[in-house]
Length: 167
Ligand code: COA
Image (cartoon, helix red, strand yellow):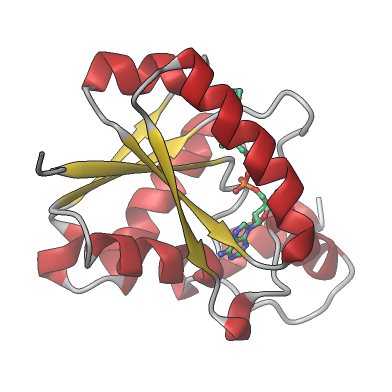
């Protein structure tokens, strides 16, 4: 069976250049990629889900080439990822693995998603070493304390993240 799309879910608070690297590589494998701004109840957001989705769309338009950007769909979902996938007939979840420490959590999620939505598969892409230490929380913290985060964020988002993080 040919797979025509994949979903790249996350909280994206905010989307970073590391996420964009995974997204670009996913788009080289699938004709359509859905970036799904989802909810992780364990995390409090700096940006609202609506703001994050808008920021993802801006980053995609700015940082990906137009042909690739045209194949990326940005969506939001407040419920289970498995339910969204079933409703959209998407079978593949893409996740980036930055370090061994990511693995255990990712394994649990992958198995749970497969139980909730039999037939779904998780594809792991190894994060580029250039971005393997980056997380949204770390970018928010550095921005809040006056550090330079321009190397980690899409250019169109830098000022917004700095302004929000510094409160
Ligand atoms: N480059 C840079 N940063 C990366 C990265 C990469 N390649 N890959 C991961 N990260 C960072 C993220 O920035 C994030 O940092 P943060 O912890 O500071 O926010 C962290 O690694 C992992 O975040 P993310 O990819 O957003 O995962 P998450 O744990 O926030 O969210 C969801 C996981 C949203 C996919 C999951 O909670 C979900 O599916 N929610 C929907 C509800 C559901 O179905 N729950 C049951 C799941 S089985």
